[in-house]
Length: 246
Image (cartoon, rainbow, N blue to C red):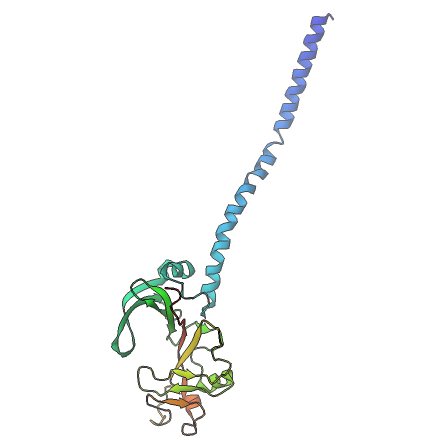
């Protein structure tokens, strides 16, 4: 074989080898490409689930105050509880016939309904007061008070007698003093937890079995020996005193 023919043969051999290498290299390349494709997208997929998790935690617990705070306005409420569950009402009934502008959570679900009052009613800024009044509510206070709890149970939980206003008027049954018990607010606590008492339906109950006036009464008042079982929690509330957020 002459030199030209040898070079041609070598060139053909190299081309054949290169072609075979390219075909061999082409076969496994799709597998790494498939593996590499999702890796940059993985963080983007994980982000929504992490962002949504706090909302699920808040809604599933129904504990007051929970995530509620003075700086929580309507937009934040929508993030926490869902936009469909946040309703702004310009004519919400208040005590003594007053009306106010505020927010209702879960307006169509009495088991989750809560009413929110703001310091600035027009702008709905500065969450001031949250109340729950539905007897079958799922909400509870984070100190252990639940709807329907009898006065006697409340006293045991507090560890000391409590004082409350008499029945029969707009602010009747409001707890006015925990007497330094376990349920009392502590210095520096930005949240005040409250409850209001009402009468247990009892056809046999005498009219004077529970205190009835706008004065304050003690849970251990001997004049009302049955009041511990005849009065129960009918409203849960938290309040955020102060105007630092406005």
